[in-house]
Length: 88
Image 1: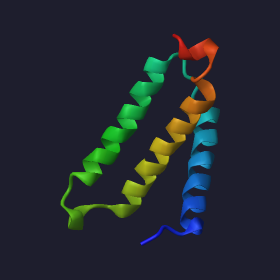
Image 2: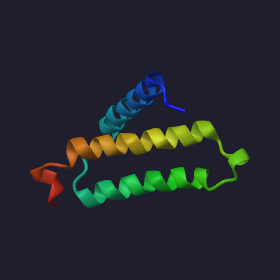
Image 3: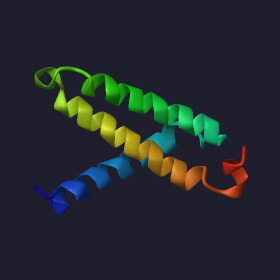
Image 4: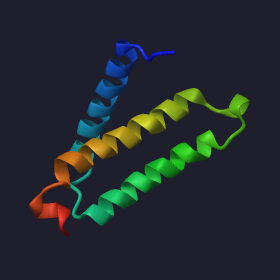
Protein backbone atom coordinates (compact mmCIF):
# COMPACT_ATOMS: atom_id res chain seq x y z
CA UNK A 1 0.00 0.00 0.00
CA UNK A 2 1.42 3.36 -1.01
CA UNK A 3 1.78 6.14 1.52
CA UNK A 4 -0.37 9.17 0.88
CA UNK A 5 1.29 12.48 0.12
CA UNK A 6 -0.80 14.03 2.90
CA UNK A 7 0.68 11.72 5.54
CA UNK A 8 4.21 12.41 4.34
CA UNK A 9 3.56 16.15 4.28
CA UNK A 10 2.05 16.04 7.78
CA UNK A 11 4.99 14.05 9.16
CA UNK A 12 7.62 16.25 7.53
CA UNK A 13 5.86 19.41 8.70
CA UNK A 14 5.72 18.03 12.24
CA UNK A 15 9.45 17.20 12.07
CA UNK A 16 10.28 20.70 10.83
CA UNK A 17 8.22 22.28 13.62
CA UNK A 18 9.89 20.05 16.21
CA UNK A 19 13.34 20.91 14.83
CA UNK A 20 12.67 24.65 15.02
CA UNK A 21 11.15 24.31 18.50
CA UNK A 22 14.16 22.33 19.73
CA UNK A 23 16.58 24.80 18.12
CA UNK A 24 14.89 27.56 20.11
CA UNK A 25 15.47 25.68 23.36
CA UNK A 26 18.79 23.90 22.85
CA UNK A 27 21.97 25.45 21.47
CA UNK A 28 23.50 24.43 18.16
CA UNK A 29 25.32 21.08 18.23
CA UNK A 30 29.01 21.56 19.00
CA UNK A 31 30.22 18.46 17.17
CA UNK A 32 29.13 15.54 15.07
CA UNK A 33 29.67 13.28 18.09
CA UNK A 34 27.28 15.34 20.21
CA UNK A 35 24.66 15.29 17.46
CA UNK A 36 25.03 11.55 17.04
CA UNK A 37 24.54 11.06 20.77
CA UNK A 38 21.29 13.00 20.67
CA UNK A 39 20.12 11.06 17.61
CA UNK A 40 20.93 7.70 19.22
CA UNK A 41 19.06 8.72 22.37
CA UNK A 42 15.95 9.40 20.27
CA UNK A 43 16.39 6.13 18.38
CA UNK A 44 16.67 4.29 21.70
CA UNK A 45 13.38 5.81 22.87
CA UNK A 46 11.74 4.75 19.59
CA UNK A 47 13.24 1.27 19.91
CA UNK A 48 11.77 0.79 23.39
CA UNK A 49 8.30 1.26 21.93
CA UNK A 50 8.93 -0.90 18.86
CA UNK A 51 10.25 -3.78 20.98
CA UNK A 52 6.97 -4.02 22.89
CA UNK A 53 4.39 -6.53 21.78
CA UNK A 54 2.48 -5.06 18.85
CA UNK A 55 -0.76 -4.83 20.79
CA UNK A 56 1.01 -3.00 23.65
CA UNK A 57 2.59 -0.27 21.51
CA UNK A 58 1.46 3.30 22.07
CA UNK A 59 1.25 4.41 18.45
CA UNK A 60 0.97 8.10 19.33
CA UNK A 61 4.17 7.85 21.38
CA UNK A 62 5.85 5.89 18.58
CA UNK A 63 4.94 8.62 16.07
CA UNK A 64 6.20 11.29 18.47
CA UNK A 65 9.56 9.55 18.77
CA UNK A 66 9.78 9.08 14.99
CA UNK A 67 9.11 12.81 14.55
CA UNK A 68 11.84 13.60 17.07
CA UNK A 69 14.30 11.38 15.18
CA UNK A 70 13.47 13.24 11.97
CA UNK A 71 13.79 16.59 13.73
CA UNK A 72 17.23 15.72 15.09
CA UNK A 73 18.27 14.53 11.62
CA UNK A 74 17.11 17.85 10.14
CA UNK A 75 19.13 19.78 12.71
CA UNK A 76 22.17 17.63 12.01
CA UNK A 77 21.87 18.33 8.27
CA UNK A 78 21.45 22.06 8.92
CA UNK A 79 23.91 22.57 11.79
CA UNK A 80 26.58 19.88 11.65
CA UNK A 81 27.28 19.03 8.03
CA UNK A 82 29.53 21.98 7.35
CA UNK A 83 33.22 22.82 7.78
CA UNK A 84 32.70 24.68 11.06
CA UNK A 85 31.14 21.82 13.01
CA UNK A 86 31.29 18.71 10.85
CA UNK A 87 34.99 18.06 11.30
CA UNK A 88 34.97 18.44 15.09
